[in-house]
Length: 364
Image (cartoon, rainbow, N blue to C red):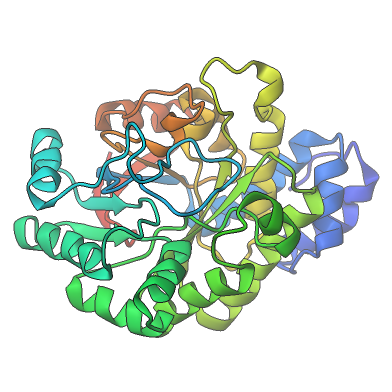
C-alpha cells in the first residue's frame, strides 16, 4: 500500500498491518481518533482482500423468533414482552410450522432462531423447536440460541451450560448465532443488560460450543453508553478466545437502533462511526476470516460502502426480521437474492452465495 498518510500517527499501525502484526487496544484508539479516515478504510480493505480476495458472501436464510416473552430487562430492547402483556406470544409447534410454511422457498438454507428468555415454558420447548424444524426441513442448518440464552437455559433448567449444549446438539443444533454479546465489559452489562449472562458466561458458552465441535458467530452492539475503549476490549476478548479455539467464523458489528422508527438522526449511529467500526473490526480481529456488514442495521447502501471498508459478508435475505424492527430499524425486513447480488456487484466485488459455514453454493 503506497498511499500518502495524512496522519503520521498511523505510520506505525500501517507497518504493523503490512507485516501481519497484531494491533493493540492503543492502536485501535488511534484508529478511532484519527481524521485520516480513508487510510483506515484502505488498510482494512487490504487486510480483507488478503483473506478473501474480491469475494463477498451472502446466504438465503429465514429468521424465526419463537417467543418474545422474556425475564430480562435490557435497556436497548423493544422486542420483549412480559407474560400476559399485550403482544406477548409463544409459538406452539403448529404455529411454528405455519410461520415457516408461509415464508418458505426452496433456496432457504438456514433458520436463524433467537427469542425471549421465557420462564413460562420448560427447556424442552426450546429443544422441541429445533427437533420440529429438523424433522420437517432436514436440509436447513439450525442456527439457534445466543450465548445469553444458553446461560438462561442452564439457570432455568438446573443444568450446566455444557449439559445444555449437549442436549441442543442432540436435538439438531448446528451453530450458535452471535447475539447476546452486546458489549463484553461488566460496566456496560451492569447498566444495559443486568439480567443476562455476564461477559465470562457469554464467552464460556461459545467456548463450550467450540469444544463440542460447533463453529459459531460473534456480535458487538455498539452506539449507546460504551466507550471506544470498551468496544476494543470487546474485540480483544473475542480475539483471545479465537486464539484458543478458532471456533468463530465471523464478527458482526451491530449498530444500536433507537426505540422508535421516528427517532431523529441524533438518536442513531453516524455513517462515519458505522464504517469506521467495521474497518477497525477488520484490523483488530486478525484471526477472524470474515467481518459482516449487517444491512438490517446500517441500510443497503451503507452496506455496499462497507465492502470497501473490510467487510466480506452482507448477511442474507432474512425473509422477516423482527428484533431490530421492533425498535427503530428503518430498513425493509428482507431483500431478495437478486438485490443482494446487485449490491455486491455495484461495489465491484464478486457475489458468492454460501451456506452457514461459508461453503460456496454458487458464484455470480
